[in-house]
Image (cartoon, rainbow, N blue to C red; front, side):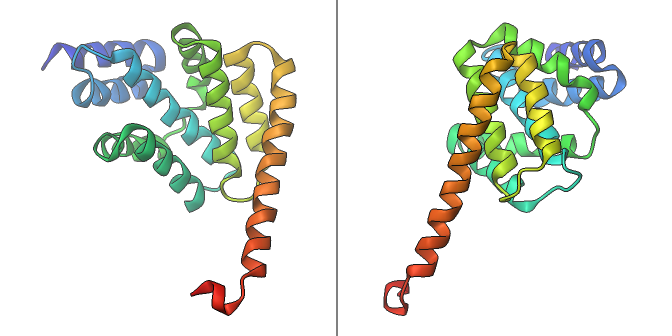
Length: 186
C-alpha cells in the first residue's frame, strides 16, 4: 500500500472517524501523487459541500446533479471530473453533515477570502439550479458561509443578490421561450 493511501486513511480517520478513513483511503489511492494536494483537497471539499446542499431539502434532483457535473467538467476538464464524480456518487450515499465544520475550517486555512466567497456563490447556484431554493438549503449555505467567511453581514446581501439574479434569469428564459414563433424555433 502506497504512502498516499496511508496518509489518506490516517487523515480521514482523524477528521471523520471510520467513514472519514474510507473516504481518505479512496482519495489517497486515486488522487494524491504528492503534488497539488491542496488543489485536490479543495476540489473534493467542493464536492462534499455540493452533496450536502443537494441533499439539504431532502430531495436529490437531477438538475442539481447536472449543475455540479457541468461546473466540474468545465472547470477541471472531462477526465478529471469523471474521477471526481466517482467520489461524488459515493459521498451522496453518505451522511457527511457532521464533517461540515471541519471541511469549512480546512478551506478557511488554505484558500483566500475571495475564493471562499466564490464557494458560497457556487453553492447558491447548486441550490437554485432546480428552480426551487428551499429554506433548508438557505440555512445550510448560511451555516457554510458562517464557517467560511466568519462575517455574516456578507451573507445576507450576497444571498439576496444571487437569488434575485437566479429569479430574473428564469423570467428571461421563460419570456424568450414564450415569444419564439414557429419560424424562430427552426
